[in-house]
Image 1 (spheres, rainbow, N blue to C red):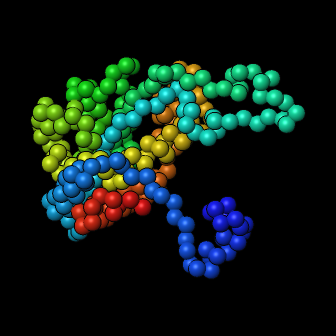
Image 2 (image 1 turned 90 degrees about the vertical axis):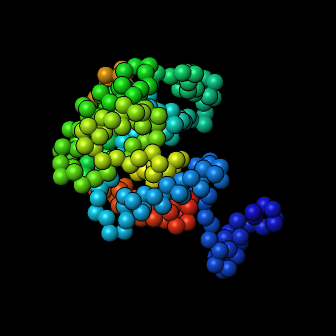
Length: 264
């Protein structure tokens, strides 16, 4: 702005301050079409009315899946290097001055369940496989979700809010929920494309920052699994509670004013 008006940056800041103008950073929001936003709002209305009314004390259990690589090139610590002014970048070992990025780097897919009471044990998906309905039912639900619910929600006063992946709402999966007496949010009440309503989405970012802290890299998937388990155990209880503290409030905001109203 200073260059545009041929003046100094300090003078621009002075004028802005004197006029009570505040700079706001644009917020990233999901790219959704108007009809998707209408559908999301409609489902938020149903969530508020049928599952989480203002007086509700029912807890929320969520699940999701995410990929972890042997290293994370997206964190800042892995993006640069320091070099003396007397040296040329061309004189350095190419391993220092360049990041070699595979087109299809090996990744590990993990599944988690989470609520304000805690975090489940991670379920590691077999290499080169996505979470199919069979894997979801036999590995995620039976071997990981059930022990989590028995540990933290044995009183049964909760709703399980699955991700909208097709395997999560497959006919056999819904039958398993009913057979195991797991109260769940039906697909008709699950808002699409609304990560702002699902704190587990923020949890993934936090967990990855812990796993790859200091530019850490895994030499093998076994090492990566150990690191992920260790990082989950080190998550402070207050972090999880804070993530879930405004979920119901955000549902009500989205129901009243649309899903973008829940983005802070």
